[in-house]
Length: 436
Figure 1 (tube, rainbow, N blue to C red):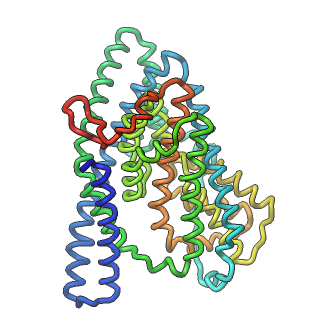
Figure 2 (figure 1 turned 90 degrees about the horizontal axis):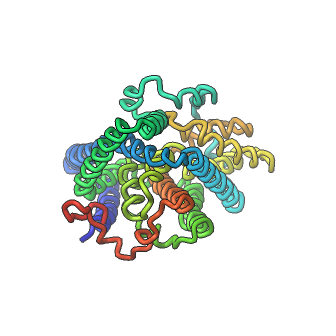
Figure 3 (figure 1 turned 120 degrees about the horizontal axis):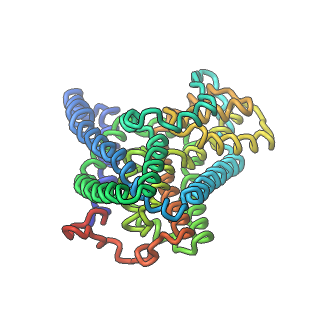
C-alpha cells in the first residue's frame, strides 16, 4: 500500500476513533474509571505524545529545508536575474487568490445569510482583540538583524530574505561561490533524505494527531453554529475545487484533476497538523517530485505561500464579517464589503509572520467597517475544526501558484506533472518511495 493511502486511512481512523472517544467521554457510558483511563492514557497520553513528536519532527525540518533549498534556488535564479520577476508574479498571484477567496465568501454568506435568526448569541460575547503592528514595523522586520535568531525563532520571511541574499552572493562569487553552492546542493540532498525518513512515520503521526484533536474538540459547537460552519466549509470547497482548478487551467493549460490527485498526501498532512508552516517539508517535496516544479521556483513560492497565502483565513473572515453584521443587525453596505475585500487582501501580506495572525486580521477587518470585535468570540467555537480544512486549502493554493509560476518561467517538467503513474515516484538513491 502506498504512503498516500496509508495516510488517508490513518486520517479516517483517527477521526473515527476521536469521535468515539468524545461520545464515550460525554456520555460516561463505560463508567468513570474507563473514561478516565481513555482520557489520561490514550487521548492526553499516547496520542498526545505521538502527535506532538510528529509535529516537532516536521518543524525540525522546516528551517533547514527552506534555508538550504532556497539558497540553492536563489543561486540558479540569480544567474538569469529572474528573482524580481519571480517574486512579482508570486506575490501578485497570492494576492489575487486571496481577493477572490474573500469575495467568494462574502457572496455566499450574503446569499445564505448564516447570521439570520441567531441574534440571541450576541448577548454574552466577549473578545479582546490584539493590536496589529504598524505596517512600517512589519516591513522593517522582514529584514533580519540576526539571521541565526531568525532561524531559531522560525521567522519565515526573514529566513527567505537572508537565503535570497546569500544565494545571490554565492552566484556572484566565482570559484569560491561554486564550491559553496556545491556544498549546499549536497546538503539539500541529505535534508531531503531526512524528510523521506520522517515520511515513513507519517500515518502514525496523522492518526494520533486527529484522534487527539477530535476527541478533545468534539462536534458539540457545530449544531449551534451549523449554518455558519456550513457556509465557511462550502466556500472553502468551492475555492479549492473550483477557483484553483480554473486558475490553473486558464493560466497554464494544465489538468487540474492531476494536481489535486497528486496533492492528496500534502493535503492530508495539512488537515492533520492545521499548520501550513509545519507542512512545508511535505508540500515542497510534493510540488517538486510529483508536480515537476523546479527547485529554484518551488523553494521560493512554497515557503512564501506558507507565510502570506491566507485564502482559507480570508474565506473565514468574509463569512464571519457577514455573520457578525447579521448577528448584531448592523448593515455595512456595498462600500463596507469592498473595504473588507481590500483590507483582508492587504492584511494577508501586511501581517504575515505575526503570531495569531488570523484573529488579528479579522479584528482589523471588523474594525474597518464598524462591527463589534466581540463577535469573534462566537465564531471561535468552531474555528479550530475549520482551521484544519483552511490549512489544506492554503497549501493547495501554494501548489497551484507554484505550478503556474513555474510554467510561465519554463521551470516546470510537464512530463512529471502529467505522469499518471505518480504512485510509483521513487527516491533515486535507494529505490524506496518517499511520497507515493
